[in-house]
Length: 348
Image (cartoon, rainbow, N blue to C red; front, side, top):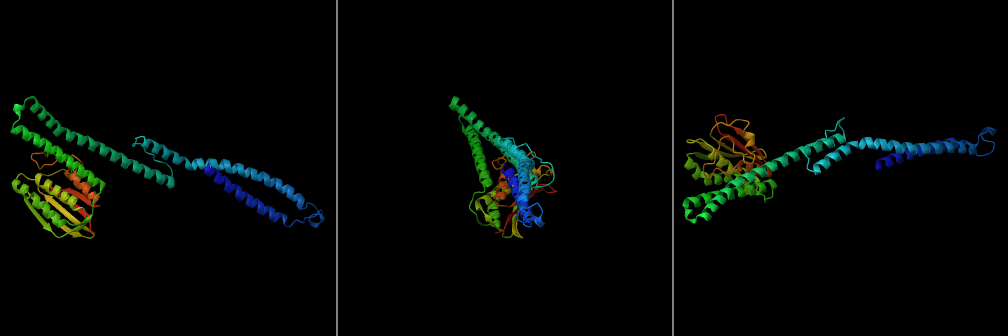
């Protein structure tokens, strides 16, 4: 209605201006007397009556034409907005699979619909990912809690069966539930990106992580080496330490049975600082590597055989922390086996 009234108003005003100019230009040369021009008729009085009637009819036609034409044009021009509004209503009801796919030439409405479709695709992917994550988290938490419940039921029914083995199993199940909960909280913290930023030297972070995990590497017979130069970035020292620790721990755990090797290298690059972690191990198919950063993906036949095998969130946490620090994560399989993980973070 606003477009219609605006269009009709413009048409009427333009017509009134044209009629007014024609009236003024026509009548200014006609004398205002009874004899008219050169003592003949018509005179200004007669022309005013004749032209005034025609001008009034023309104005009525312009008003009607402006209203009808404006209504039709506004309806045709704004019809794409109805499709976009319908898609928004469906999305508000929870249906994210609907797409507008507006036909026609590329214009502002087509661009708006394409942007809306892209937003719906990302929302659908994000919601699906969150649903899968919630389902996987529930499944992972259910196992240790169910084990703990079963052991407690056994102990309640027959207290004489409570021995060191049962307590150890109960402790292991509880420890796993606690580790998983802490990992979920850390993943959520990384996703939100809420932390205090400070200057962090990644070479010192790598050395601290290697020093912490050195006993694990020695116990497994893995050679752990840290090389490189100071590489300073801005971020959370705690989260960056967890990022490197998770990567080094994965590199140690998923390695050769004997004679394995893990190298951690840091270096500054143009407007960025790089952490590169490589390990030996079995060959991984290329199609498996992109899934490793998904929550609860352990890849291939990897199993949990000790207390350092994790809960399937190690690389997901790494990916979350890297994104929170505006960095890039690159994971590629090494031709001879194992992985090469490269993290690029912006320099201050």
